[in-house]
Image 1 (tube, rainbow, N blue to C red):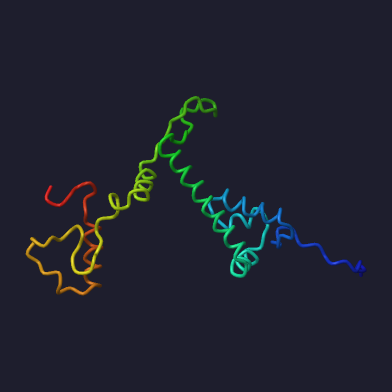
Image 2: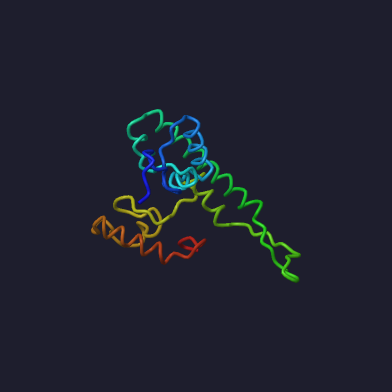
Length: 175
């Protein structure tokens, strides 16, 4: 039977640890921002325990501030990448000859532009089937001969959902 050396066993490879130095925490915060604010992914890359991160965030205000700042930087990074993909596009290799691409096609993302506009100008580009109590902002109108005050909030929300589902994109009521 092998004898124990009396030393504490090394941590198994891949098992998360708790950073001991400020530099190790700095690397963790950098990875949070680099991975779009995704704390779980940053923990995987830096091999930091998620439980340690969430414990420190609950008990240390300065740590929470730095974590929130790193997450904001990550969101900025994602937004910059969305803008780049929407306007500069992403190259896709096409036209292969003998396994090598000899042509690229640039794909642009209209859906990314749509999300960016909704974020920057929500009043102009928000979803239109919203319920504001007793009437719809878009959909049924006062002049349609119906009394929506007789419907419960739940019924109005169901109606709004159905109208939203039936709406034709780009077409306004009365067109």
